[in-house]
Length: 281
Image (tube, rainbow, N blue to C red):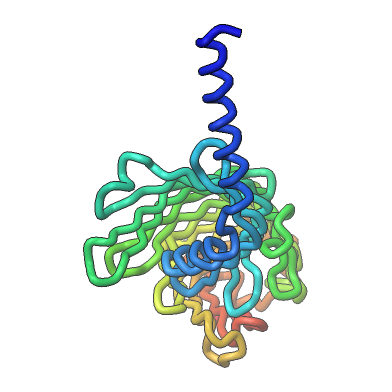
């Protein structure tokens, strides 16, 4: 065996041994709690629990069973999320981490920035949602007794004020309601768009627009996320404009005064978060 071969085998042995010792001595439990706390700090009003942490071959981390919840109710559960540090940023006061995970046949990816320059670390988040099928996500497809389906895309990021701002779009959406609205329990929409802001456990909906084959609608207002049973948690108002075919089909079941309105029909969704009510004005 040549000297070069011996040096090469020694280098391989050292690398393999270091990897084994790192894996066996990896502080999984300590990191699991720490990462959960840091991610929760970057998602106001939500909590993040991490089931397990292990190192990856690319100097990153693999998180398993990442559960995002609101008031102990799961919002989304990721089987696996990969976090990759930006090595050049680890030596400064602001460190960056790229992440990606799969959800409902689509993916969520983005970047987390930790600013340690102040007295308390600040967490910045910028993420993208692409191709998530709502009907494949158990915690998203239910809507207080109804059912949701469609493709979810969008983006969200934290602001300097601590709010989590985002814009979400649902294409080819369908809503199946537990109770009839406008004499119908199923509605199909080509697109649903809304600007959202989450801060201090309150969700603000702006510029909500629904475009469907049977009706169009506009929506805005606020949703207080805690507690779900608060009588005034949901306060949403809007205007719905039925299409001619829909009006012709439901003419006998709707008040004539509503059908004659050309500017749309005002409506309100209000009540507790776990059982909101719908009314026409």
